[in-house]
Image: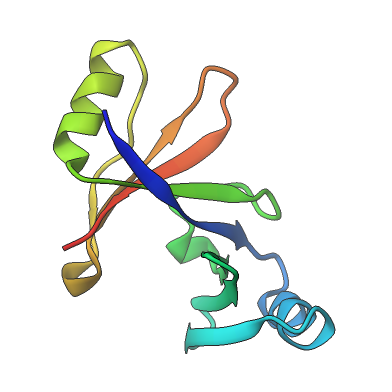
Length: 117
């Protein structure tokens, strides 16, 4: 498996508006884009930080940061993880954005693997 980079970190919000306001207004991060109350993505240097609704969070617990790693071949990466005994979530097709799947490390920490379209 070849990890290309840490693409972003997202947080499933319990109070979406309050958390968007905190990262945008209080911390001063630049908003890259927003999809209503489902997703707000901020620029944070070379990595983005996103606030997500539960529907967009791929099963992540609220208020726990989830790293998203970009891979060249999502199918191969998931195959490697499955072969080593890890449970992987369903592949989520996001159309022109790409595809992703949630996985858990050996301690149960959720992360997401992402492949560009």
